[in-house]
Amino acid sequence: MTCRDIARLLAETAPLPEAALEHLRTCERCRLLVGSPAPYGGPVSLDATLEQRLIAVVTQDLAAVRPLSSPRVYTAALLAIAAAVAAVGVAVLGVRGWHATSIVQKLYFVTLLTAGSTACAMVLSRSMFPGALPRVRTGVLRAVVIAAALSAGALYPLLRYDHFARAVVTCFSIGMVHAAVLCTAAVYILRRGLVLSRRTAAALSGLLGGLTGLCVLFVFCPHLDAGHYLLAHATVVIACAALGPVIGAVFDRRMSTF
Amino acid sequence: MSATALSNIQQLLVRYQHGDTAAAAELVRAASPMLLRFCLSQGDRREDVDDVLQEIWLRIHRARHTYRADAPAEAWLYAIARHTRLDAWRRRYRFRAREVQVEALPETPAPVPDTRTPPMSELLAALPEGQREVLLLLKGCGMTLEEVARTTSSTVGAVKQKAHRAYECLRVALVYVRRGPAQ
Image (cartoon, rainbow over all chains, first blue to last red; front, side, top):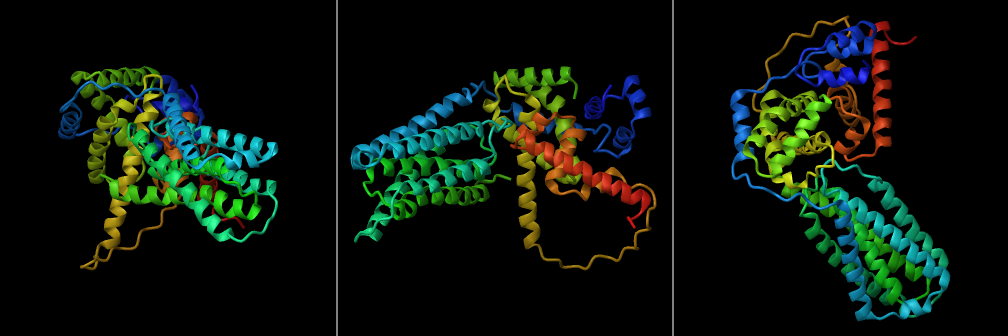
């Protein structure tokens, strides 16, 4: 019998078996754990009235429910929505940017947008399932995506032109509008599950929205200038990634039922 | 929790999703003690825990469709319990921040210094919240590293790191208590 077995046995209400007692004779750490007062060790009792109350909570209006589909289904749904939002945006605004960019820029952005969006959608869909194991830490994912988006500025030359400020505001607004549409749609999907950390989910939704906005801007915007890219395109990703947790925290506070 | 009991909870959860009232009642009897212990082990008061437990079951009831039969039942239950407890804590914190003390507390005699090893509760109370939670889930609830990661919405690596730091803190605290401060 190992220390882990002892920890598992202590979580049960039954008395310890002989094998466990044998282990305790030789292991000081487990003796300390067993000797500690409840609730760290030993059984805890549930009041009969409380138990009846809890049973009433789960049995009233009890109806059969269909379990949620696999997280992969929701990952695909989120990616499909992102693609649809980007497609509509591109259809309305045009593809001048795509024709103006070089093959290296195209390769870089296609890789960044595909990998970033897929990773965001995967982590986001898993957040709908309590107890699902997150494969990537949200903070790390956000940092990597933002760093990659900013690094893309090195692919553009530095240019000067007259309507710089107006172009920046226009592109930033376009990116943010697309991000907002994506985030609203993502909320409808996430509501099907139980999102325990709204802050994290909002951060990921924002990041996915930011990448969708970046995708539209990359295909549409013909301004091949590092300053324009950093101030109008990359900031969409940064602003969405920063705004997401703030909005999530506000919702967290307002929607907390307890 | 033994493997048989866990598999039983898993089966009960599936039957609960199918609308089986008897399974729902049995699930409450089987899982409530471990949820109760989890809340108590985090340092909550018993009178608060009863309300939290009811809220946990309410959330479990509303979110029963999010359980998938191929996922570990224990991690699913603990993840909901953990977040419900945190919500309750935040609410109490907000309440206390607005409370106004109207009466002075009666004076209490100074505590008698205890030379024995302090109880585990005191040692754990000194740990940071995140480390204490990981340690209690690992040792108090008998969960594996992966289950703790699922419950705390964290990665296995992060859980390992927190557990390691908690062991180090406890080791230092125990040495300090038994031998006195290092020279």
